[in-house]
Amino acid sequence: MTIIQPNKNTNRSTIAIAVISTAIVATFITGVVVYADTVDMKHEISLREESIEEVKLKNAETQSVLYKMLDAENLERLASEEGLIKDPAPKYLETKQSQWVFASQY
Image (cartoon, rainbow, N blue to C red; front, side, top):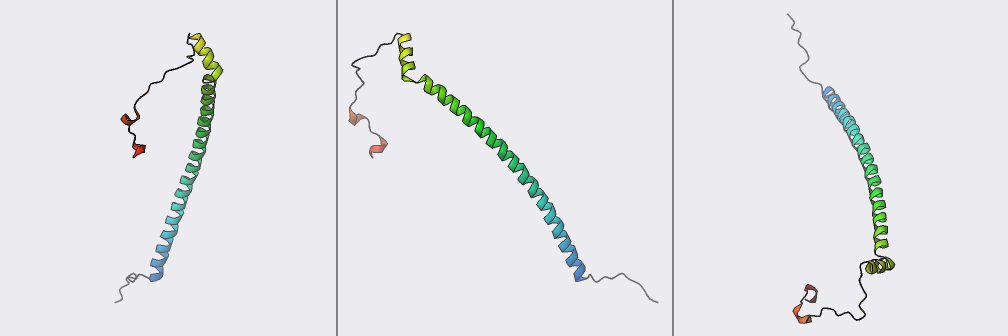
């Protein structure tokens, strides 16, 4: 009597094909994920660049307003409006130099 049994010996080529196929599928999936992340990152970078440009513009506008406020003519006009006068001989606070020791002197 003959007993038919399936091939219990696994063929090396079958195992190799299975490993290679799994590696190819994993590589493909990894490539898709990396590509999607790259596209998302490029989109995020472009949004950040637009935000940086807006901040630069606001900074330039703020500097312009500040320079206009600190203009000598504007400050003199403001001083005259507030009733301030220019002191021809100002007296400054004087201290003994030996009392004030700074780290840069060491």
